[in-house]
Length: 403
Ligand SMILES: *Cc1c(COP(=O)(O)O)cnc(C)c1O
Image (cartoon, rainbow, N blue to C red; front, side, top):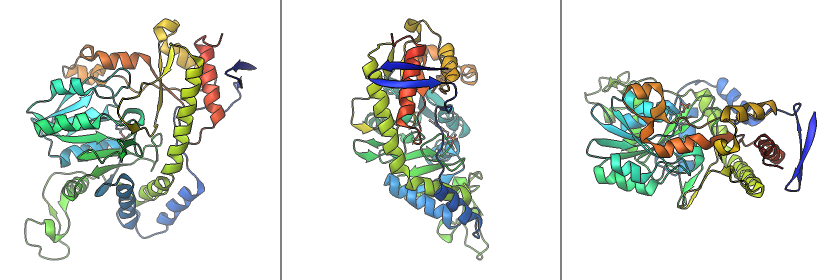
């Protein structure tokens, strides 16, 4: 079964035999595998030079003083909030649209979560809403660079400064993005990355804290290592000898193995190429959706400030109600055509766990409006231009837009 949809001058064959397009996936090449094998044959499978090397490369890429590699992006948020001194009695402001980890990390350190609404056009934290919930108890604000687009960091930074809070930027989607010409992380006290396989680069599982100061990086590194200080400079007691180490705080084991760091550093070298590819794919989606000219199917809105997305996700805004289709049926019809989609994200205050804590999603109309229309289309660096054409043609068909 194959049929041609001739629109926009493009002719795209849709066949159930075509390769399945997931919404996101990793791109591992031979040099990545070689880098992992080299570490497996070395003396250190964890800690050691591959870890320091990856951290140095990350810090250089983000133009921050230090990076601390940790076991995943959630651990990075946990370590960053702890390093920022957030604890019991404090409040952490988190946008209502993100992955649950952005909020959970505040609870891990004993703080409470206060949600801010998002701009329904972009899904990014709304500084006006955030302004209504910050106060003397606010110890951190966690702007999330949803889809890879930097959050309004200047406004969030000003709000944080006004109440003496830290900015911990959740940059899980945005490594390589720029905000007013600066790389992500440069406009925050701390920023966090994830190297999960669907993210921009991968180490299998993995994450990192980008720190704006050596002091914050040292704290994050100590938290990663059980709260243990290494090296006499940081000791409270006089060191009796070279075996000595000192646990000063309650930390965790959040280490990223050297094997994973080698993969991460190999991937990081390709980030410019990956980003260029993602930007080209996003531009193609934008152009095809614009040429389709339907109000029912639009690209996500762009913020008014100068920023360049890293395009972790390509989220379309679909008016399912006016199209007369449920999101579930559209996703199923796309899946039948070999196209995977996903929804990023369900508003966190709507999760049963957060409702039970007293949060109410109805108080976040921007998040609900964004969520109602969001659908993440396939977006990954190894995708072909023709794959984008195939996705848009299938969407047009499923939504009855191509007539
Ligand atoms: C992926 C992700 C995380 C968590 O990263 P893990 O590596 O999966 O722990 C946190 N925040 C956002 C916005 C994410 O997308």
